[in-house]
View: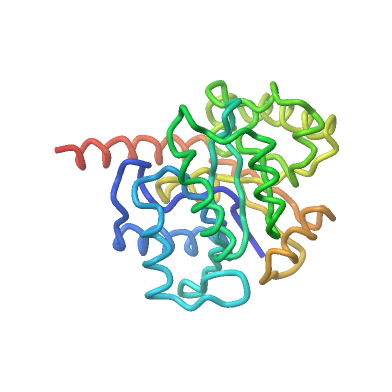
Length: 251
């Protein structure tokens, strides 16, 4: 099973959900060779629940994923924490929706949830907890206390950061940090535009249908991370296309 752990289905947090764009994104994800994605939309994106209302109305929910024309979509959410940093949570549909409702007070930057409180909340459900792009200059995780970070299930080797920081340099940072914390690493493209799909892919030894199965496979390192040889052109092209789409939307 080839999976991407960090994806978005909207062009930006401030944009409206577009069913046509959603269908284009999922079609292209399959064309890029993906079998599954974690849909980690930002917790404070415009009309977060609209995405799940659309999924519920149009696609079957099987085990712990939506079957979107053969693409497995595992529900998720990307959360900003008070101390600075982004945490990806992946879980069952009802758990992600419950987490979102618990976070409603924390949508504004002045009220972002503390890291430890978010871990407490996530641990009250069966959740995969991933430290997003831990060395991104704007949202690093390196300042958090190690005993708190060890509550995570993995760190994110991020496609966007591999491009902006450098493939070898970012890998050195993330793998070294993960070794210190004794955490696995998973790959996430961080795509908002489909050209970025397959810039980084996790290839699992088997096919999994539940959060428990995926979480166990991460813990057992039962997968291989593949970085595309054309990662830079994929991310660069997606970034330029995203910028153009946002400009056109503003017209």
